[in-house]
Length: 194
Image 1 (cartoon, rainbow, N blue to C red):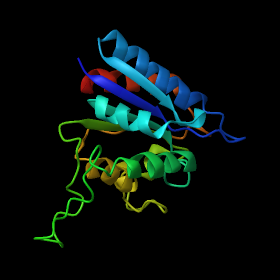
Image 2: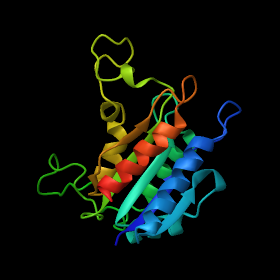
Image 3: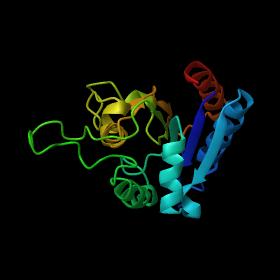
């Protein structure tokens, strides 16, 4: 079975306590452990140790990032986590620099990842309704998908040589939440991909 690192990247705000992301993190941990996977859970809001987090990424076969979408990206606390942990791991433990070599300095940027053969999965919670995506007539995203919006996060993991599992998303979680349906869909998603 797989070793799975689950990162709960939620940052508490007065309008968002993090119950949904906490519940999805717990659901994934329990469901995957029941299927025989070895699980480690990191809650970013509780702080982190850089060396322990690099070791967690080296240990894991799969990294599952559970995060709300705040201003079209991850919360600032997870960005700080990435800045500290991922930068420290550029010494070869997560990647060997940016992958370029002196014999071809303009080629292969981002191909220095040390985590080849590992996977990652994004699990996202949105205030936006699902209908906001993949529709060129919609004002904000103009036909873009969830994965288009999270292209930079995909590139962060690809920088380490990791391959993506299909993204999971909960939509309209603040104005028209349907948590029970989301939990059922997540259960099926995890069963299909793990």
